[in-house]
Amino acid sequence: MMEAQKYVWEGAIPLQIHLHESEITSLPPPSPALILAPRIGYLPLLLPLIKPYFSSTLPPGQDTLWFDYKGLPLKWYIPTGVLFDLLCAEPERPWNLTVHFRGYPSNLLIPCEGEESVKWSFINSLKEADYIINGNCKNVMNMSQSDQVELWRSVMDGNLDKYIRSSSKLKLGTVTTDEADMVGQVKAGKIPVRLYVWSVNEDFEDMEDAPEVDNWDQISYINRPLEIHKEGKYFTLHDALKNLLPEFFAGKPLINDKPCIEESEDFQKVSSEDVGSSTGAEEGKEIVSQPMESCCNDAEIKLIRIQGIEPKLEIPFSWVVTNLKNPEHFLHICVCVKIPNVNAA
Image 1 (cartoon, helix red, strand yellow):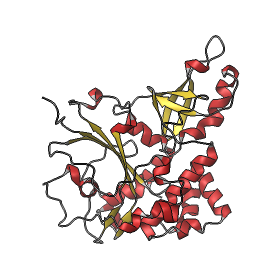
Image 2 (image 1 turned 30 degrees about the vertical axis):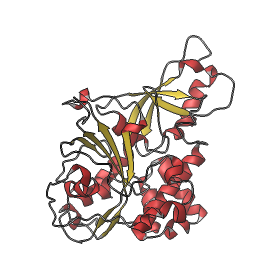
Image 3 (image 1 turned 180 degrees about the vertical axis):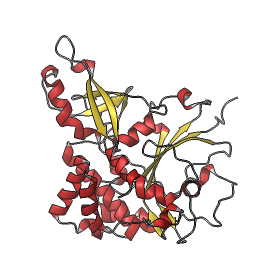
Image 4 (image 1 turned 90 degrees about the horizontal axis):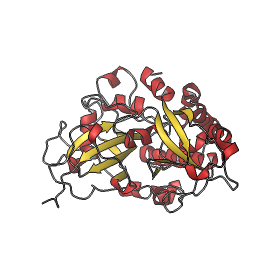
């Protein structure tokens, strides 16, 4: 077991959760709830901890749990750690969130029926990863009900040992884990990657001065698998990002001789054929199979964050994937890009 992987699984975000003022029916109002939320977990899974704390002050009605950060409704299917990395350019501890039990913004968020919705979103992401790595979803689709329950329970409990035992049956390994891994050698194959690209037009120097994300339209949510063609080639995070986001590296030479990314037509079929209707566009997820709309060469990458870490770009990509991927086998990368306003006078 890699020590870094253990740290990821044990990682938690300190939350200070406030009940929205419109739902407070008693005086004095309740104090905020203080909770440690697992990085690899999902906000709706906190319901058993939050509901009892605020239950005495809630108005009558049916619970429809959702959260916002500074007025921005939070997408429940994005892991908690990724939300924190994406929305807090300058980490805020504790992270102040507002919880709602009424008035679900169905025009902005897809429905969530509690743990069951989160579980199936997780399983569908696992199917996507299986499709990317193996070309089909058979390994996940053929899981027994008991194996599926055991895998999900290991994620819920943050039990890495149990997760490794359960997930090993899926044969989703994509990178080496021996000594070669430490010098940056990778196996040929496809690696599931999710990119969250936050584009900023305003001018700023330090991340503490970056404008807040107040609309999800500012975030490009991209599924863009990385295909490695050459086994044993030294391949860094820098190389990976140049291949994943070529639109921000136009005209700049790659460290490797040829691109390693290839997005096949087969991958574009994953949502409808092997994964099912619960993923892709239906979840509000933008699956992009070609570069984002043209960016000028003056675009500047201000921040790259993975699992709360701002890694050095020369780090071996194989180490990043092995240790920092989430349990559904996707590597989530948050990127902040400053793009000059071409309309500015």
